[in-house]
Image (tube, rainbow, N blue to C red; front, top):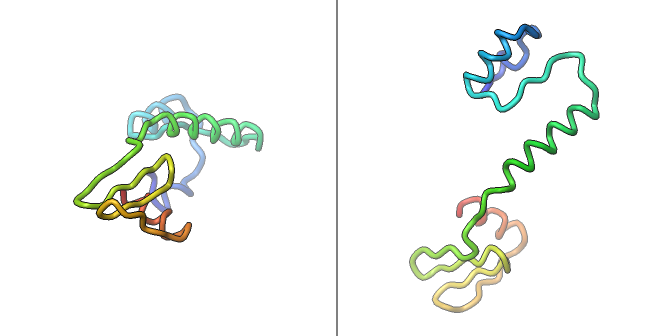
Length: 94
């Protein structure tokens, strides 16, 4: 991952620089100038790759059960009502 100043470093477009960046862990390398459509296409491709991971439909820990498909949380078999933000936070932790 590129941190702060590294993200603002001068543009390097040489093949060796691209290879070094990819070998260092970059998922992609975009050189300037680039078009907005190209950037959006690359973002869509990244999203497709990250959305292919499958999560278990139901996650259990202790007496808590989170049904991710139905967006339902149960504790001790009884449904726990959560706001959308509460559920989103819980989902991040699961």
